[in-house]
Image (cartoon, rainbow, N blue to C red; front, side):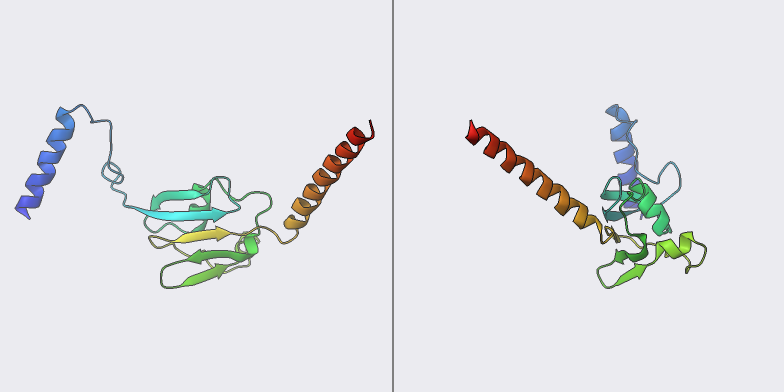
Length: 142
């Protein structure tokens, strides 16, 4: 234990001596331990985030900027290495659902797209194809 304490003190002294005192280790200054989670799908900024230990699903989604307008909050999935869970966040927001689940380290949150959204993309893609074909037809007529 004493050896570990000496190594930590030596590392802190080396960092201070090298002018790196602006760098921080998450949780040291705030006495708050952080855990890593992954947020995928229909959120503003999908990615990996550090959230406080004991954070819930809402804190995890909020860390990623919140849900997009096409998010299907009724089927949010929380995946762990040993299990997964589906949660209806819509019901909670309507004050009818179960309590929001607390996240564990390494959780992957997936917020799916509403079912009808793929139709919009298909129609948009078809429109672009029709415009391109129309342009080619007009140019070939000249």
